[in-house]
Image (cartoon, rainbow, N blue to C red):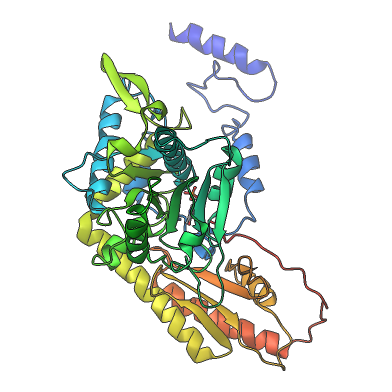
Amino acid sequence: MENTRMKQMRRSNQSSGPALNCHDLPKYKLAKHALEPRPREADRLVRDQLLDEGNSRLNLATFCQTYMEPEAVELMKDTLEKNAIDKSEYPRTAEIENRCVNIIANLWHAPEAESFTGTSTIGSSEACMLAGLAMKFAWRKRAKANGLDLTAHQPNIVISAGYQVCWEKFCVYWDIDMHVVPMDDDHMSLNVDHVLDYVDDYTIGIVGIMGITYTGQYDDLARLDAVVERYNRTTKFPVYIHVDAASGGFYTPFIEPELKWDFRLNNVISINASGHKYGLVYPGVGWVIWRDQQYLPKELVFKVSYLGGELPTMAINFSHSASQLIGQYYNFIRFGFDGYREIQEKTHDVARYLAKSLTKLGGFSLINDGHELPLICYELTADSDREWTLYDLSDRLLMKGWQVPTYPLPKNMTDRVIQRIVVRADFGMSMAHDFIDDLTQAIHDLDQAHIVFHSDPQPKKYGFTH
Ligand SMILES: *Cc1c(COP(=O)(O)O)cnc(C)c1O
């Protein structure tokens, strides 16, 4: 037996050729040729393509999460194949989503006397589409019942000029007029004194923003609620409020639990938030909750099969991985209320530290010092000697890897160019110290530099809308 094997092997080794294939495993003697390591060329090629991309941890432009605990990452990797829409194949996952909806509704004070409903989404954009559609359908029903001529005007939403682009998409996709309440130097969020000027019988709802993307400021939802309450007593066409809390939804409840912006206000009927912003999950997961099922018209709810029965779902997307919502549930049970509060407080402290350091450095005038969302934004003070702009400063910081966006403020204020730093949980105090050192150096370098002036710099915009 042994002999024949040896012979066979000798024979196969005689055929001089390139590397052995897997049938010719050397068993008794060192093979002549090296085996190729398992080729991973596709992997290498794709990784090489991504080499010079920005480092996500140094990305100070985004609200989106750039760090999760290794355990969470493992869990999410292990659940990538689960399809969130297949409720009957993955009933436990469906239950996890349901628990998250309950946890979030509770966090936002959904009243016990009403029966809330909600869903996960891919992000706030999908959540806003659903909330907007619910407002449109509910308005149409009310308006029709009250004899309004539905063809006379296009329906509209009322929102401040600080809206995120998803609302523009919503209006374009679903034929809605956008009644934009302008912002100005004295009103850097929704101007509640004038909001009713933009409301009429065709208004499907008013959108309040908990955390304006540009500046981090909150709309005054409590005052808006009072204004709407009074208005609704005078009309047969009531309006209600949706809160776009993409960023604030998972931040404000921990930092300012007393602040009333959520379902504690009677006219707030729906709220959305991004799980992948201060919900601390990688992109993309979002949430939308209605305080009561009556605000989510039945036409928008579709049934999917679930354990031999049916489960109502509302979603624009169909198939997508469930791993993000499993990651969301992991965070909820891992951190609990106190854990989230601690994380957000640290984030808040870092934002305040940056604001103080910038004030100390001089030359900047702060628009948000981190007292609402944990971000700071600022413009340059007028200084005739300075030869550089915030765009130059962004470029300079990028040399050290820091991505810090510079952009003009929204309509009416586009002559004001600001820079914004969003602080997230993974931007700790020591990184903040490093950043301030680099910023100080960058300013020093720019002050010393001979800058060839581009006489009419085109305002650039990048990386600040998310
Ligand atoms: C980020 C953001 C959105 C969009 O959220 P996604 O989760 O990225 O889709 C909508 N509204 C506001 C106020 C935002 O900050």
